[in-house]
Image (tube, rainbow, N blue to C red):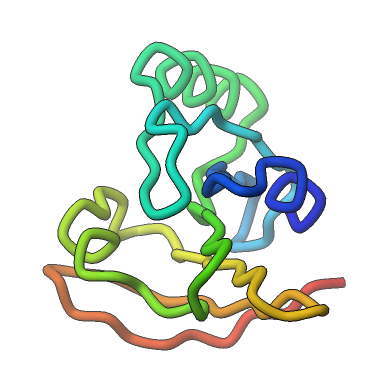
Length: 120
């Protein structure tokens, strides 16, 4: 996830994580069709294809991730307004410092709740 975010600089990177029992097993790098350092949008055809592949693997959507190349790992008002997957975690990777900062949230009905996440 971090390598994907670094590779997309100066633009925001975005992607999906799928797996079983709330544990991410597969990363899906998505194209940011906005090509923007402050926003992202995923291509609908690519999303449909990835969701089909997720189902075919017997997995479920676990998280949506994206990067903030120039901002802390806190959801923006646009992130909150346009988040469409309340069953999934929302991970933001901040690239503002030498080492990346990760934060995870649950966003439901525009209510943002920080979540613990572990990477191993």
